[in-house]
Image 1 (tube, rainbow, N blue to C red):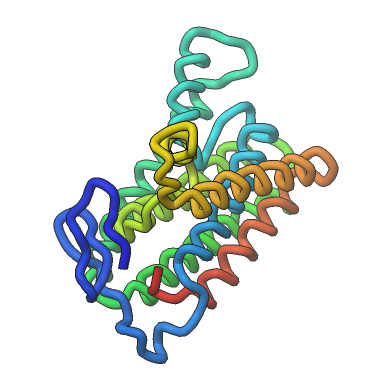
Image 2 (tube, rainbow, N blue to C red; image 1 turned 180 degrees about the vertical axis):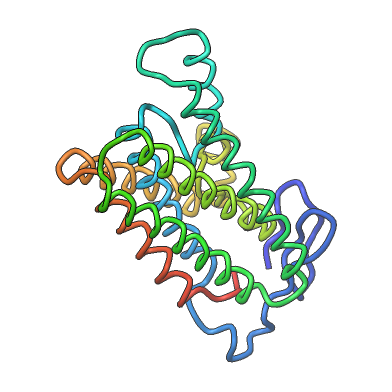
Length: 246
């Protein structure tokens, strides 16, 4: 396994995370499926979809990228046009509640196989995003719909982020790229020339860009429900096929 940046070295039994080790499935038949690196790259595409929906369709608020959301809250608090304090606070609070839930799930299932834990979280994300798609199809307009979509998607992203953080796969947070881009540049030939994990980092950037572009196109041409449905289906498929191996 790979040593996680900033954490202790891993042994053969799993990946290090905060205060412990997440066991893999030991290469057994239960571990068959798509490796976590590919799964997290696919989830990065989903994040691009989700933030395209929230920023373009829900009043300039992020529900996956909380770094951007804190900045947006500052804009809204200063009275900048086009930004909403209630929308942004709703997103932040629901994201944090989702992260708390993700922490509780980690405490309950983190000592078991990563495959089971990852699949459970992805299934919950699929249900939450699917519910947001259903709301968007049934009631496409109105303030209650907007708050419901913000709350459901932000909670789902908080749940997922807490899980991804505990899984500890380097350079694949699935929702933010600042440190990924920093590492890509600093380890390039113009930096220290190590090229450390450059393909993975490049893939993460491309995945986010692709998800955002697809999400924006769907929002502009087909409203909010279709990209949410695509995101829910993607999470659901990943829940069925994810393995526990990096």
